[in-house]
Length: 292
Image (cartoon, rainbow, N blue to C red; front, side, top):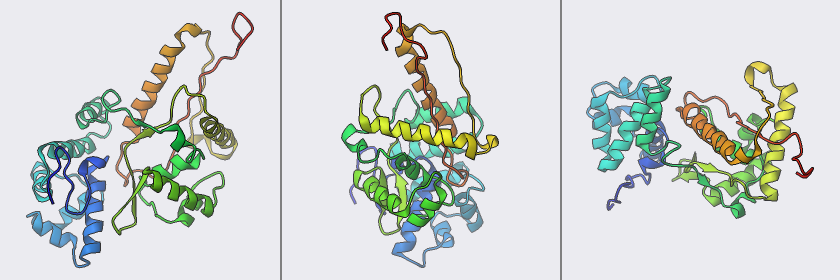
């Protein structure tokens, strides 16, 4: 297969730069290789990587360790990565070794092109958002990143809070896949997310209002239904100069983006839940003229 500049498609149909962590990429490769050749094993793969110990590879896949410099380069050689892909893969490996090192993680995220400054999430088109405006659309998308995820409607329906039927799950899965917000790789039934997405901002839209109202309703229910140890509710009431609203919005959006990068960028083996980060900032008083 011919190479593609900056991001080559591997022989099993994936680009490494489509993945948020290196371990998910390796798992996708192994799952696909097993479909094509049921006799393919970690042992066979380890031999092709020129590693003496199969357990090293299995520990990496299971999230029990990260590859050292030598094995990282062997992966790069094995997949025949381009120069940019090799740099991306090395950065993903480095990122996993920096859990808890927030400032260093942001530096590596910037190298990956995934920092808030360099690569903002793709904004969903308002026409597409009309089809995914139910609150559970983004929840299902994020569920593919938790460690025990199963690609079946019954499992997804049971794991979601606030009552979502199997039929609703199936309809939303079909829509997310059709619009490209979820992908199924080859014949493995492996669901994964595409690039990061965000909802439109400062655009009056009934579907966006519906989404936020549903999430606020879920938040209200969670006050009584979810133990305080599993949630965080905080608020601040302040006297405010409304001419600085644009500045305030920028600060809130930057914090949201930074929070996402630092808290959600984990391997699937570490994720066990999907949480909602919700911020509201609105006036409690009318302005001088008495109008909104």
